[in-house]
Length: 170
Image (cartoon, rainbow, N blue to C red; front, side, top):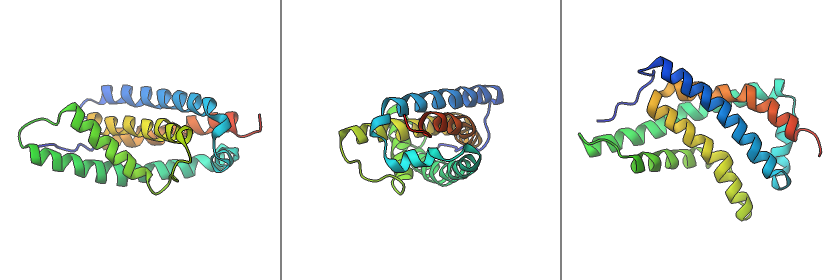
């Protein structure tokens, strides 16, 4: 049976994974947004035109809710159901990935509009699903607190970086 963890079993490994995730996710999103700069929506650009001091607390709260509802309840529930269905067998990597992807897509549905074209579809998949898979892996590997700290801990670094990149006309 699958046990959904709240706290990590190995704190040192979790701290390293959280730190690497925060830095890696921030660098990846900045690179993605730089690459797709000309096709970003005006609403997205307006979000990061705000000063990070006002934006970051809101984004941290949103990230915390995504982790609580999406990761702990939704992904945790799917992992538990899969674990019960498999009984004593382990959840394989492909089923794990499918559960993490399904949970992340369901988390995003209320916030994302239907992509207007291939470019927007690719951007949404890389920009929003990619980081969610990372938080889903942290949840699976190190527990809810690691995913929560990784996701919420990214915004104090990411938001000022995106403000610098996107907050003024280029």
